Length: 491
Length: 95
Image 1 (tube, chains in turn cyan, yellow):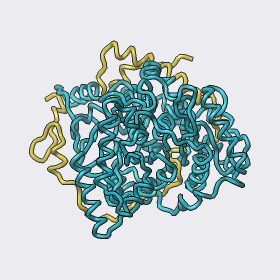
Image 2 (tube, rainbow over the protein chains, first blue to last red):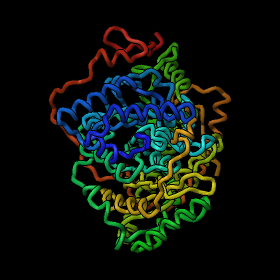
Image 3 (tube, rainbow over the protein chains, first blue to last red):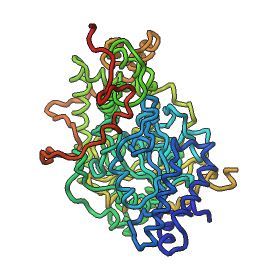
Image 4 (cartoon, each protein chain N blue to C red):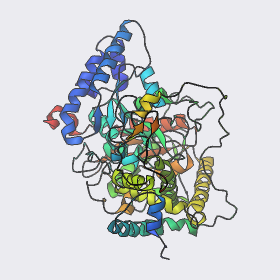
């Protein structure tokens, strides 16, 4: 077996037994990168020197008897919207071309403290706006299962890298499903934590009340490990959660016997592709047979969640992206006045999707329209949260397909923003509510493309969510890697 | 109900210089998206409080003490134009 195909748990055990070194792991992952990147383009930046230095240091620490935790010596990738001191961070935008941040995001700092080897920065939809990773100023990432297809978005680079073994784990950010949807389309596990459990300090903001950093792993257990490495209060983030929460790992092996599982009526019928619906139903049947009490529940406001999201997210984005004005960082287009300089810089710097959302948000927040659009959307958000609360009074977790379809073709939805926005219909409600959710691969559709199964839990319900996810993983037995990940496939 | 959009005004407020063709293009796209988004208006929300944040939060204060900041040279090194310790920009006023 190629070392790049190990799980984090397996690699960690072999590092500790002295059977292999962090330098060996990094070499295996870099071989995988050189085999797949010409097709995939999952990475924007590979920090070869930094990663080598970190791997050498990790081995030295092991030989001194130090153990910094489960990610010690493990090669990890980061979506390029998390700032990394000394390594270019662009958010896939021309407006940040050449930007070298003077500090590390809290997540990056915690990974470094935990001994992780940060290999590089992965591709994304510009400023994390999109569902396909086609909106990158530096080129599209391809789906490892079929390079004619998108990897999903916006964390498509992170999901594709984990799927082919060009990283053992990765971090993405999820504003409307941007970790879970690409994880689903690439056949890996992707998780959005409860809002506030992972610090957003150093995450370049898109929509602050929805954005959440989260892990992408090859297995549920690896994903828990990645989550634990970065979770916990951070005084640098004013929205960081300060209380305690249940150990996310404690119930992993308990199975689902006696748990109450709710199928969301509004998110499992119309508009779901037949192959996705079949894989979803098969998984539900297995959970039922394993002793869960399965029932249907209704979230009536979800019908309006997508509309509310496409007012709230652009409104917050238009405010957050006002800082990209050609003054403090990034390239500048000259003009006779400050306003002319800023307008020219922003016209040239932002791609079409970002421009569209800034305009939408500016409109929704402008005088005369605020109450009808933004204000009303914030009230709908309250209704969505109340729906979830009612549902969680009846069941322990909710389940849905992660994405209504499997990976679509590159270019297929490029000219139809509304069709693209519908990709996130199953994932958006939990961004509005702030609750955790995870996508687990459960099978392939008739075209050989992976299908994801989503488990949602109430706020701070990570333990029960991972418990169900682990059982879904065990029952579905999904253990197939894309052909591109094997040396034969990459030739 | 068609939605009224003064796209040139919106672009000016957003400080994004757009060509006349781009203005037409984005106006059409905003129409489609906003007509879909306007469905939120169909939902009765009398007495419903807006949510700005998913978790109940209290203000996060820190003590009012001077702490180390980012290195000024390192920060200014990222600016497209500078003069000494300042960011340099074109004139704000006509004269």
